[in-house]
Length: 214
View 1 (cartoon, rainbow, N blue to C red):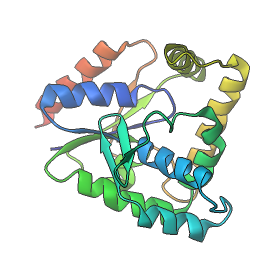
View 2 (view 1 turned 135 degrees about the horizontal axis):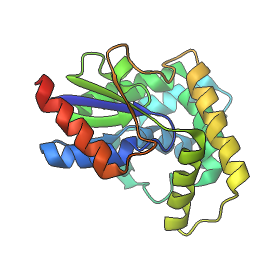
View 3 (view 1 turned 120 degrees about the vertical axis):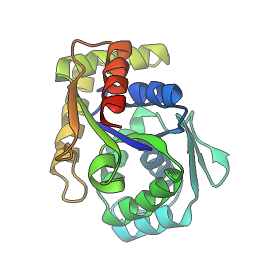
View 4 (view 1 turned 90 degrees about the vertical axis):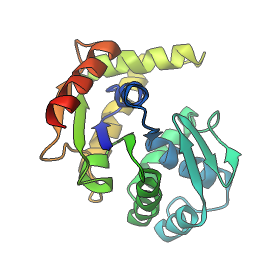
């Protein structure tokens, strides 16, 4: 069984996806970690972030592994490094390169063999257009900024709420307007507004729908 869970920043897709996977006995993959890993590798290398061809070649050359919310590149774990806020501007540049997405989609599909719950922004539209179940999570900008702030607090990282709101809104804009795999719900996705739901309630809603349609 393949379950796609898409949505914007801090809509809860990773937290919900992980819990749904645990309930169903399936592996969970947060596809965004793969793009973060590539952004980190670009930042650490001499690759010109404005050279789309070079970014694509780098993405094709590295073997990524994702296990839940941990990520490795060619055997080196990068989990503690890929959440650096300084990578966010580079992340948007990397994510819109067609060659990068082509390389990572191939790896994501390989990770889905045998069944998977995968969270991201284009899982139901591009990676697994024939997924058994597709969900698209939404929430207001204000709620997502609040959740994002809690994530930073949990990691002990400083943040500016106004700057964070601008960053989340800008990522939404860039992801939605990019020509390659834009952020949008698949035509057959089930849209769940997580605004007034906690994680338990959202997970329960997803799990309720799956047996109804199986």
